[in-house]
Length: 428
View (cartoon, rainbow, N blue to C red):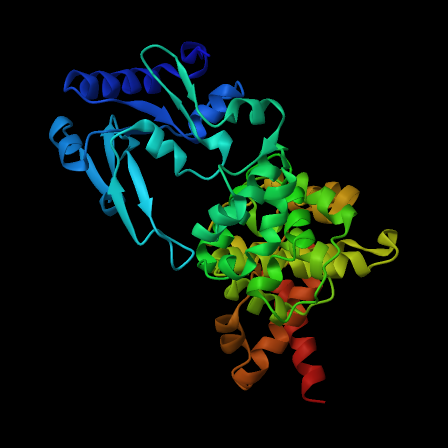
């Protein structure tokens, strides 16, 4: 079956692919586009990246191109760089024996495309495309499974999952991002090879979770991980069964893709809404999420817990919005990014209709932090030299509460008068 790559592949990528294909074939080697990019093309999608396979060995590929990086040369992979765009080129391989459930004990270079396709995980990923002719090579009925939206391993699923414990997690991720179903025997094998999945690195696991967050329906990944009890493999202290809250997962699907911390907060709130922030931090760090994603998740998780516990949203006044939500946002993100009203609107999965009020308040640029006050510790020292420094925080925080209630009070002379009153009450 031919695929019209001309209409799906952007011109700059297409020119590069033809260049790589021409150079390798001109030197007497074979060259095929392979894997996920071919799957995407077969589905009528524009691929995000393009991987190629060849019978040329890495040292031979390196002689043919000017800029080549040894990204995975021990596995036969090098990266050719054209106009600052990377293209992985992997030599035909035969993976020999897996004893650790993570990687082949050794890799042999193969001589045929068929040998290379046979070692891949799922039928939908075992497609190869001749760039020059557009001819699709499909030796494992991957196209049929794509048409039927089915995830199926090549050969015995238990054997394939035993080779690499990440493959079951990838199956769940593909089911989520592609909206495919997992073929029954393949799905059954997920449970039967959990002891192998347990061997994978936590970094590889959380990377699959984050990849699913980039898809249209990340809630499906969380549901599948809960259904298959995958979290418990890495977090044995969790309950034996987790029952995600559908309403929270719906909000996860509506969350902006650039707010990973909020996505994580919604995912874990759907699963474990009653855990403490400390317990959640231990979970996130155990799963090797980055420091930034962990801190962001904890902030948004705390917002979720507080907001969901408020029974009557009409009772929330502007002071509460500022002190409990907007001030923490400003404090948390002020050194990393410029938070504007458009960004505040992205918090809708937490606050729902109240987001508009939060956005309106933020747009007024109110003073929210001690640093926003027109008075500081140096001013207190000058005006009240007898005031113990241990009381500076008390005075300034009371001034901040005043200004949070009434922003127009944020002017030096008025704050100085209020300071005198506060100090007078302290020494009574």
